[in-house]
Length: 299
Image (tube, rainbow, N blue to C red; front, side, top):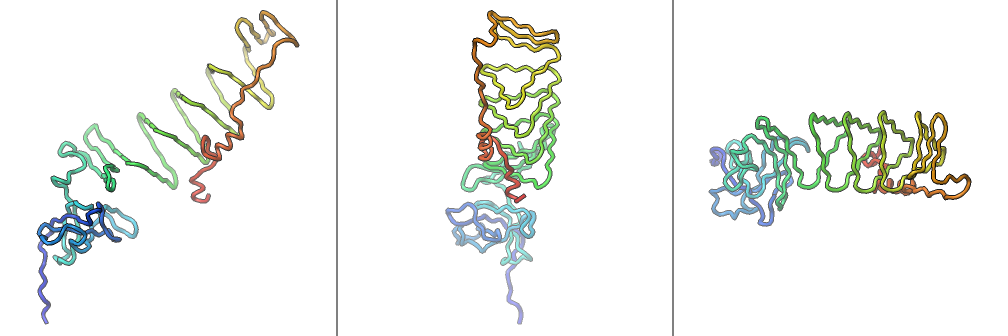
């Protein structure tokens, strides 16, 4: 018996993505969507307007590839495999008068943009490329959080200026060594307190002059020996009194000089207790003594 005639669809058609009234993105487990065709006068532009329709993506593999689900209200181009009306597939998407491009055209014709939109919100994430001559730029915008994970090495080179601005806290954890080289000048300003804990040895070498100006108390406390050595002279001065130690001897001058009598030793202003610093390190409040990355991987 002859096969019954089945109508064929001649070429692609335009449709609009539809779904339930309270949804903005509506799809199934395969990323398929529902469509409303302009010639369909009986459907209500909802989740009953069509069967589930597959969507062509830029790359599709086994749990890898690219995916961008067309959202309700988007205009799409629908093709039909072998002209079969029962095998529709979304093969393209189009901007139009009500769904405008991310940047006004033709003013931004040199910009290539990948921009998403916050689900039921006004924010967006974006990666865009500006190719205008002498104004080339790669722009990256994260609406909220941004996570970068590098399982091996990361190399970064900036040939000119680099500026980093952090609106709240910053925490840096280095599980091994850290080296910083500044070939020019370096300025460091802390408007609050500055605490430094070194559990091993610490050294500083200055090939020029070293000057320290302290508005408050300057205290040094050593559980071992304390040595001050100068190749020229060592001076202790308070007001008009002073002690100068040099290779030729010791000079002492003061309104009154008391030996084994008078006066009293000053108290040493100690920094934060090392035990407190270690507790802070363990809590991650001021210092970090562990590496979260290694804890997550079990190393």
